[in-house]
Structures are given as structure tokens and as C-alpha cells.
Length: 498
Image 1 (cartoon, one colour):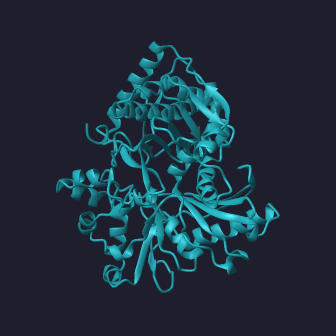
Image 2: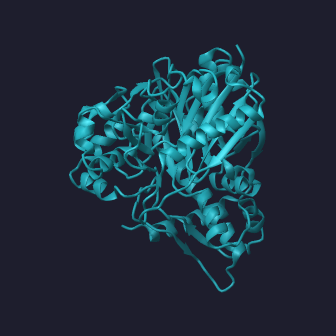
Image 3: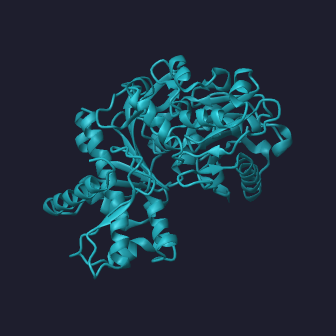
């Protein structure tokens, strides 16, 4: 059997397919962007057909670039944007509504109603999540409420639902497999992460028929085989994980206390807590890091909604840079005597604040504030938000290792040395950038490759993790303390309720 593994990385703005060889090196990539739909302020949708077309085409492109056929691929691993939800017809596979994206805020009123009824504690105790529009359960309930006849059809078994991985597997297998993995299930507000089952009480609260939902499997498991007509041969799908959990695996954070952060559109920091399901007292999320061989490994997660998206705002909104890569060089030119603070609450604030109504603000402007100062404030906002997450994690994770954390990073922003040095300075902790930056796809590939028996086990895989560069903190403690004081004051002023 060939040792090639295909990873499908289905993201928020594009889909990618990456072929890895037996040495776990990426040898070919296909990538395709797809349209974003914003039907109302705060609403974000994707056409599932666009996602499907982008995945199929990128698989073909990657195979062509690698000069391989489907018969050369031992297995497929899938990783995906996690909280985006799709509902489709069982008989035809046709979606009944556009996919509602994780960034979408339309269910904020429903979340507030449930909170006022005192239900958030019930959801948090069972799912580890908060009642926020970010998660897919309230989105699913919205679709059933707003598509005529949908809830009745769902009860009759005519409809199916799932996160993007589930929809893709359904299509890839020709409708033979309606499945997901534990990491994706754990982000729905409907899955009890302690019992590892769909929770009847939560389903009843959100009025979601269980018949809609997929079977939940381990992250490395048998998810079905692709239709021969798609790629020319059947390929087993053997690994699935939500994007942030896949990055935990790709960064080889298999030991309790290990921490990774992915800097893409948003920033997602995940701390492995092992078999311990840590209930956060600081508004972090308790979630499933992965489930292997029936054994669940838990994590604490902090979600920052805007990281790289703030750099895109510099480029597309303010037009002060031509490309995202220019932000670090511009920030380095900023006047060090100016103290600008950007609170990038463009779509609300995530952890540890969870304020859906907050909106972006900038403080400390003077007549001399210009593009360089805006660039520095934008990149520093990412570092400040990361510090907020690490502080919350240290309070929740009462372990000696928490005081000696090394942060492993990945995502588009980590190419910027300036940004990573800023993060190390604000954390007062080392930041490690690996040589292999395709960690999300690599994690999905490892799940599939290890299941197929062509890649090593977790211990040997972890030994293969390689450091590109470590960024050590250089900032004086007094300067760090002053900057963090200013940041916290800026956040306080920005929150919708103080």
C-alpha cells in the first residue's frame, strides 16, 4: 500500500487539499477560495455547494500536482471550520438553506433568552460551552424555525444535519455515511462531553430532533470510503477533527499542559488537560481535544474572534498596507512614545469576555497617530488577547506546568517575526514556531495515516516535531505591566456592559 495521505482542510474562506508522503512531508497542495455571503449585518453564510465544489476540485488539483492517482492514497483525513452548520435532504443531499457560519451572530437574541431563563449553567455543565451564537446548536434551531416545514420534516427523518465534516463525508461516500467525530460534536451545544452522547435534555431545549444528527466516532476511525466516480478509486476516510483540535495534534501537544495557538482569521489557544475535564471559572471553554481508541482527552480553549482579520482590516478597510505581510515592518516604524490600543471587537469579544454586543474601538489617538501606529496597535491587540487567554488558563489549570508554559504557534500570522516577538513579550513566555506550519492539515493527516498503519504512533510522531525558531521575551517587566494596564482599561471601556 502506498504511504501517501490526503488531508482535506476545509476552512472559512477557502478549501485546501494537501498530499503528504510517507515521511509526513507535504508534497502537493490544491487551494480554492469560495464566496462569502452577508445577507444582513452580523450574518455570515456559505453555500454548501460552493464548499463541496471547492473540495472536489482541490483534491483533483493536489493529486495532479503530485502526479498521483487516487489509488496511491492510503487514506483521507478531514479537518474543518467547526461550528458552521448545514441541513440537507436525506434523499437528495440538497441543502435546505445556506450553511450558517461560525462567525454568524443572528442567534444572539435566542442565546440571551435562554440565559435569562437560567439555562446557561445547564449547557456549560454538559457541553463545556457558553450560550453564544458562535456555537452551532442555536444556528441549527434557527434553520428549523425559519425554513418552512423543516422541523416537521426533521422529525419525520427526511432531513439530516451536521457540521462541515459531516456534510462532506455524506457527499464523499455517496450518502452511505452520516457521521462526525467527537471534536466536532463537542462544539454543537448538543453533545454531552462527559458521557460522549447527544444530550436529550439539550436537544429538547433547542427543539432539535435527534434523527437529524450524525453518529459520533473517534477522531481516528472508519468514516466510510469515497465514491469511485469522484476520484477514480475508492479511498478510505480514516481521520476527522475540527480545525483547532487538528492543530493540537499537528503540533504534537499530546501531553497535559502543552499549549498551542493558531493565528488565522481569529486566534484559538488550546491547552491539553489530559483525562481531566477542567470546568473553567474564567469563561474559557472546556472541550474535547481528541478521542482515540475510545479514550477522551480534554482541553481548555480560548477563542479570539479577530486576529488576522484585524490585519485584513488594515489592508482592505484602512488601506494602509498592500499585503498582510507588510504589517510587521510598518509596525516597527511606529513612534514608541505613542500608546494606541485597538480593541478589535468587530464581531464582539470572545474569551474571556464573551460580549457579543461589544464593537471595535481605538484609544489614545493623537494628531501624530498614523499608519505605523495603527499597524502596531493592531498586532499588539493580538498579543494582548493571547495574554488574556493565558492568564485565564493559568487560573483554571492549577498545575505547576502552567507557570512554565511554552506556546507552540501556527497559522498565517506566525510568519511575522515582529508579531511573535510581541506575543512572547506580552506573555513573558517563550513562543515556538515549528518548521512545519501546515499543522492543521498535518494533524488530520496523522489521524488518518496512523489509523491506516502507514504513519507512526503519537509518541514517535511527537519526536518528529521540529523547531524553526524560539522567541524569548525581551521586554522589561515594568513596561509590560504598563502596557497591559492600558489594554485592560481599553477593554473595560469597550465592553457593552461594565
